[in-house]
Length: 396
Image 1 (cartoon, rainbow, N blue to C red):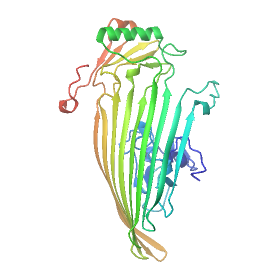
Image 2: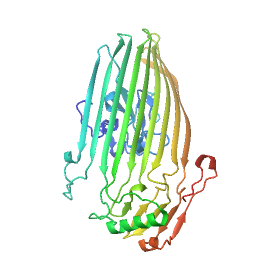
Image 3: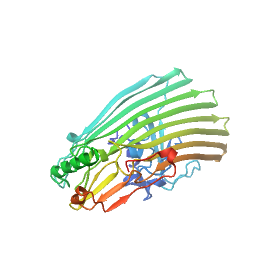
Image 4: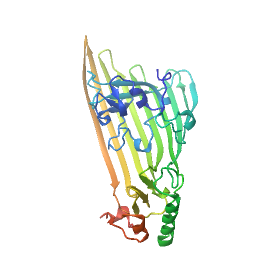
């Protein structure tokens, strides 16, 4: 079914939505997606810190948790009787990854979407804004030792490019090109600062994924699986609307890197006892980078909206490090018509979150005229006692 069904984002969340109880934004039974539990081969893969709207790690960088071509099956459970399915009040989503077999096989794939493949807006009859979305990759799996040791590898790259709309001087834009140039000249002459372009900005989104899996049939009683999932992604954040205008260097790039290693030992001691042991280590790094030279954030009220320039105020000091250890062990005993389970599930978290709003300062002006007169109506700045970590920010 996975091969036969279309997917715009090529994400496991596209397939979980076909569950009858699913609603928008990956909600099940009306519950917020924060109450879901997403696992890959039974190992947790959630946005533990809780900043991504998707509920998956890397969501703020617009990346998916694993390549769709690395997945064999997708399972969704809502109210399971099995005690090993838990930690959710919404839905439990489990993706089972591919493994190698005795036959060497693989594939190469390429998917593309752009504005030419999307219809016009049914209400306004307007053409969709320019964009290009590409995904390409390859997978291969097979035996290292037939009937004993197998491998599977998948690599995938995603590239999206979407130029901004409502640029200065365009129809519907908040800012005229003459006013935009005047602001640029003032900043250059007064402070020697380049705010970046007020024309079109190419916002890019990139994601590189590498997945590897080894399966070892140790003997008739034990099978060991080792897998590693690596993701390196970023998403450029800049948008312009009828009520807001951002100069090019007010953009920021959200970066995400993930290294997730999981080992699973499945044992069948006899017809009565089985055991499943999972040990996983997640290393997730999120951070933002700003464009241009560091400069205070400047907001100018204009024509009922806001013109913003300078370094994005929430991105000068914004980092999140997550280190997660998972240990799960379940022993099952089968007795006649009954089964008994005893086990433990443990997750150990270590977070480092650097976040300071307005660390580089924020100046707010009531009008363009006040900006030209250098007469701000408000100034905000945040100071840190941890100078060794952040250093000085003299540009504030």
